[in-house]
Image (tube, rainbow, N blue to C red; front, side):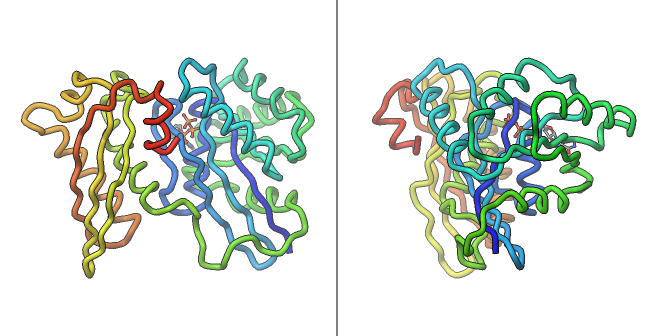
Length: 290
Ligand SMILES: Nc1nc2c(ncn2[C@@H]2O[C@H](COP(=O)(O)OP(=O)(O)OP(=O)(O)O)[C@@H](O)[C@H]2O)c(=O)[nH]1
């Protein structure tokens, strides 16, 4: 029996969240077409007859400009130092760049086995894929190099097998029925946050946080009360929209996602609140889960 921890790293937009979701087969991490939306460490547990792979989802590493930025970087480095296997994601359809080299360099000192994962293989032809595999393997000494596509499902099983190979001998770490150890309310908050960001990412990229205050089950219905926090009242107006039309859309989108996640009917009550400059205030950061 082998068991251990693994995570995917890579520059923004490399396809880490999508890959995690595709492997786990359920939407638990946040994906978007815009960089740097992954915030919480979310674990998914993959069960196999002879192994247990615990996937940890980390935010990206970037130059910290706020207290939140610093906390996030600390979180990333701590996660990296604790895992047994790391999948370094490099998209097949983009040139290898400074971001990839920077992250590869950061990984050099770690005890973890590093597997280079060439993502989005469906976007390129065979020749380009072969070239990218070669270019990636010249970046560093990787344990293995594996091309995958989260969209077509190409080589996802292979990747899991490869990552499992580098886990230590260990009894299983989590019970059989466990998919993630992230409390439900955090997953729900992430889905609300994703819906709230839809269409306003450019205006409010890092200014929205969501806290689920209450989840009450009443038979087949789950009542959820959540607060959407912004930093200024001008942002509040953006999130709510004209005659609350935007907030209604946010609720509709989030409700569909949450119903799919929880498998039950949802009543969703959303409030938009201003927490002035929450990204710089330690007390507020703690309250918001950072
Ligand atoms: N065609 C294709 N697109 C993909 C694939 N994987 C991810 N994408 C797209 O690439 C974009 C970025 O994917 P994410 O999974 O959000 O990337 P990420 O690395 O988690 O990004 P950050 O959270 O910003 O660090 C999204 O628009 C995805 O739909 C893939 O296998 N094939």
